[in-house]
Image 1 (cartoon, rainbow, N blue to C red):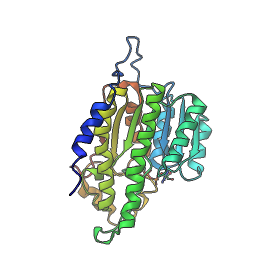
Image 2 (image 1 turned 90 degrees about the vertical axis):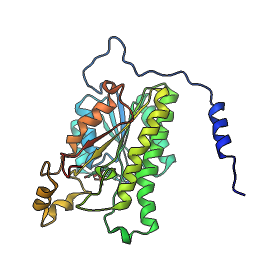
Image 3 (image 1 turned 30 degrees about the vertical axis):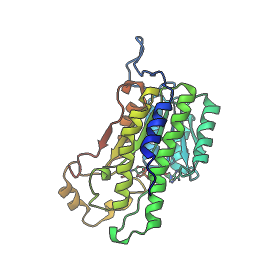
Image 4 (image 1 turned 180 degrees about the vertical axis):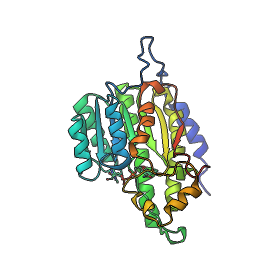
Length: 285
Ligand SMILES: NC(=O)c1ccc[n+]([C@@H]2O[C@H](COP(=O)([O-])OP(=O)(O)OC[C@H]3O[C@@H](n4cnc5c(N)ncnc54)[C@H](O)[C@@H]3O)[C@@H](O)[C@H]2O)c1
């Protein structure tokens, strides 16, 4: 017989949980309504290049106290150029597919700065090929980084926020492919990972609101990075752009940054569980 205890053990576990006092995110009376990351320490996964680096630049331009890139690869020239302008931009070598590595990185951030206020789960990858060709190991690789990586980064950051009594903000990078196919370069498994990312934010936001933790996502469309450099090289790209409608260009990663800054800042104290699609209305849906 299959086990039948699931429902009972779940409700027992819920009952056994000691009630936590609700940590309100309501701003104080003297709150500064300017949108700023002043005094905030933010960790961004995969910020050595691409969208993560663009987010880092806009966070730094909006007064973040410290921004950490938690990335697998050694920083390159683009990272170094930004660090030259902002010495408060740092790198911790991290593999987001390893909980141990993420925990170590978050602990290092807190040891160095005394706090952590925001976590952007941004590191991700894609693989474009026809759906009929994917094998299990390719799907596992995508889910391991995009879904499990984002989940455990959020969980580890949330535990740290709770431990420190910080009203933290978590932002995940989802994708427009979480809503509909990318006609220029289809990848069914990638879209599924990004739908999972967008979806998990709803429940995490609900579960963690009592701790004063907010969880949101952002869904970029076409952004010019190493992940998408080839889409513009297609001979029929101009025609495709006309066909897709909206703004006939790719985004600069920094054009997404304002939304991340908003969601990481205290100005969004009543915003949780939402997704912001940023896609230049390309391929309107
Ligand atoms: N570029 C786009 O058009 C686009 C659109 C929608 C969503 N996205 C999403 O945005 C995010 C960033 O994409 P991008 O275009 O900047 O990609 P990118 O490949 O340029 O950058 C990804 C970064 O993540 C890092 N990374 C990879 N595996 C890692 C790991 N295990 N641990 C830590 N870091 C790791 C890489 O070293 C790299 O620096 C991804 O989640 C991607 O799915 C991108």
